[in-house]
Image (cartoon, rainbow over all chains, first blue to last red; front, top):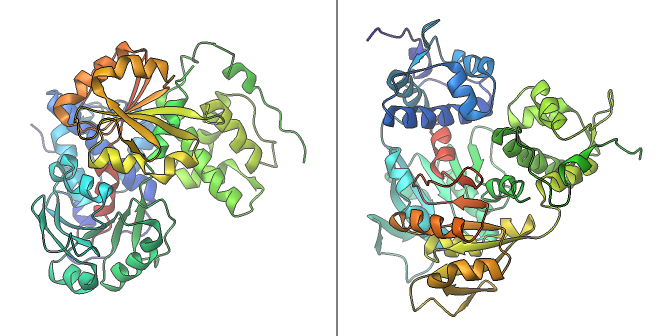
Length: 222
Length: 222
């Protein structure tokens, strides 16, 4: 199989700064491209065109090519992309080619569901610790991770080298926990609480809105 | 405030067929436009351009205009869109301007979390019943909805006029429940189980992948 020329070295300089000008939406599409490629790989498909990727995401082919151009030169004109190789490149760009260490705050129903969610582990995310304030929960193991006292959040996030924090607290606690998380030096927060959080510009906060998918489903009710 | 000319009557004919040629991705973007408009409305913003919407979604302005053209003529050249009006139009197109009746199958951690999730209610989705197979759960009320025996799924979905079914079962039960749901005449399924389901082409199945957002977050870890 011919090598696909890449320039991805530019995106993972050890300790380098994040490329500042890449739109957030492009990064989100990268992770969707990665899923489409994963499906194609599972089906034994070896090559894909920008059109194939575009159709799966509902954008146009030019958008796919433009998105990928931020990260280097992928694919071969007239041939397309090699599925397995492009997926590996994207995982490298996203930095999910290695284990990502995750902590979860709020071991309620949603938190517990997320701790046992098979989809994270499959994508190299490992929940290394959970935090709660309820004495009955603190100290036990859940899905292989210890439930720790929220009072120790800052020191534990540091000592356990946590990369990403998932927020699944009650709404009124979300901003307080967010602030503590930021103080602990965390730069990436996945927020499941339907509350808009305030965080410094160098901290990436992604809000997960579980009702978006449901809303678009309603369209098909006719 | 001037009236914005619309042709949305074409999309909600009583009992009419769904517009067949509208890409799924366009429908999903509609629901995202709706959220952006909701935020703008909360901030007191009255007008927005296609560029404003485009930037919020990470697509280009032409895409926004093209997406909306499927549903009629919105906005005024040189003025843009009236935020409140466009949002109302989109809700009407998506059919979330009225209450949508939802049933949930699988009252485990994730199911319980979804039942108490504030985000659904806020968008006019009402969970009217839940189903499980565990005798200890059946018969009780949870977040205002009865937990019913999964054995009665088909008849209860019909008699309670359910529009959308949420699947939050263990992986091995997902396809079986999906089949029963389809037999009960349900045309819209929101699948939280990380399993690919098979359903007839006239049934819309949306898979919620909770790890997509996490994956794009990993990019910011550098």
